[in-house]
Each structure stands twice: as C-alpha cells, then as structure tokens.
Length: 144
Image 1: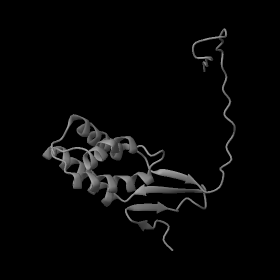
Image 2: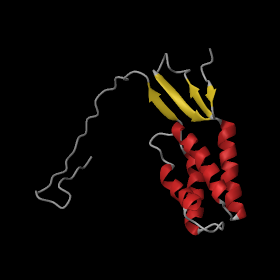
Image 3: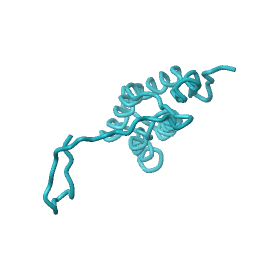
Image 4: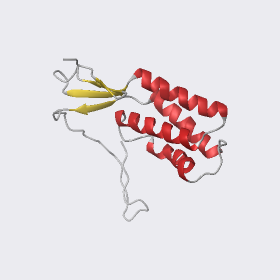
C-alpha cells in the first residue's frame, strides 16, 4: 500500500503517520504547476472570460483543501463576480490583484498537516510584566 496516494490533484502523505502521528495534505506538483500557468496566462492576456473564471475557481477551490485555514477563499470574489455579474472580459484592477494574490499564495503556502491523534505538547507559559489601569480602550494589555 502506498504511503503517498494521489487523488484528484492532491497527495495524501502518510509516511509520518506511525512516528509523528501526522498526515500531510499537499497539492500534486503537476496540478500546482497547471494552476500557476493558468493564473500567469490570465494575467498576461489581460482577459478573463466567465468560463475561464469558473475553471480557475474550480481548480483552485480543490487545491485549497490542501492548505490550512482556506487562505484562497477571499480572492475568489473576483472570479465569482466575473462568472455571474461582470459583462466584460477585460482584466479589472481588482481581478488582477486577486490573480496576483493567488499566484503568491500557491507559491509560498506550506502543505496542511493533520494530527491523527492528539500530540501531547507541554503547556505554553507566558511571562509578562504588562499592567493596565481599567478601563482601557482595548480592555487589556499583554507584554511578553
């Protein structure tokens, strides 16, 4: 049985499951490359059709499952607007910004690590010398 099965553009890496009790979810390199090329092409042609927006959003939404915290969702607003509301195919500044963010996020975000069992860790102890006089605008202060 393979420790790194590939399923629809995602790689599930079980190689550390028995030692670190973790599973890594990551984009398949070829799928990630295809997504990066698609974003580059959309930026270089300065044109995004409704169909291209739907295709890009579908692929990136799938790849986002391999990332912790759904970091791409906010940038999908440009694609959604192009799919359902925009009447133009030209690249708007807002949509260009979304495409640039998606390129950056795909290039630097690490894979998602899922703990199989609770990994016992020592407690985090914070030593502070901060003080405040109530009431404050924020309600508290913390200095470390």
